[in-house]
Length: 202
Length: 124
Image 1 (cartoon, rainbow over the protein chains, first blue to last red):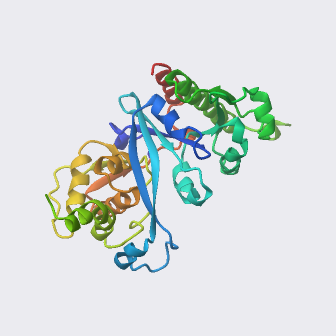
Image 2: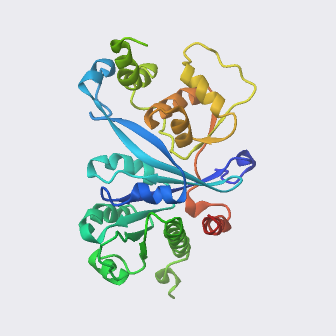
Image 3: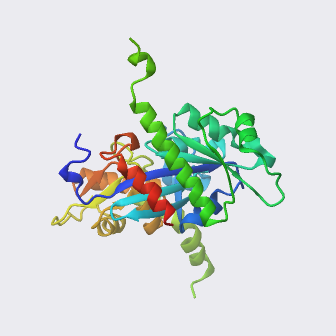
């Protein structure tokens, strides 16, 4: 596999970051704070993919469901592009997550301390699929300010998972969240590439 | 102004029926599903055999004269991702495009690339 071979010359390196969290927690706002949002939709069959579907007749019976994603692109430099995908929070859209999370650099789980449980499914998903993630607490007006340590403990996160407070409306805050994620992903990749202590032990 | 029944077809039925009609009711592409950030490039200097190619296939070929991601194609064409993935599967079968799968972050040839991402985000 010639990943960096000459056949890739001039082909941009593309990096994928997911923005997850419960409904109405500010995913669209966060993506929109750092880049222009473009509409992206997918229509997924409601039936099993393997089943024979008489698609043209099925249209009236609605055999597909439309899922809208918040899609943003940040051009870092020529041939280096970061793509953001705001993922639908509901569990019934997890088929989308499997496709989107494959090869992702990492994910931001947006949380609202008034409804902290809404982000449990996202946290579980990324833990289970070994996708590096940070939890960003969106500080809505009027929401109690929590100590990140308290949120980390309430979510029962591994101690190395960063918890950051943010205001998803602010560009500076949105980019700080993304920077925290990329730095966490770099640290995770570095740790995973080092031989483990057991292997090193005599 | 179009009569009401035409407007209905245009605004509602069109976007739903048309994409699935053009891909023959298929819901999965030929071969492996392409990653949403895979980069697509049209093969140069080939005049595609028009048989079996829809205007949307041609639109994909036009847009991918320069490298473009699957997600960008779907957004630019205002077509669902799944439909674009199927169109791309057709074009790949005919060797009219090349597909560059994204490099897994842990296997980037140069670890500095991710540092560059951090620096680039700081400049936003």
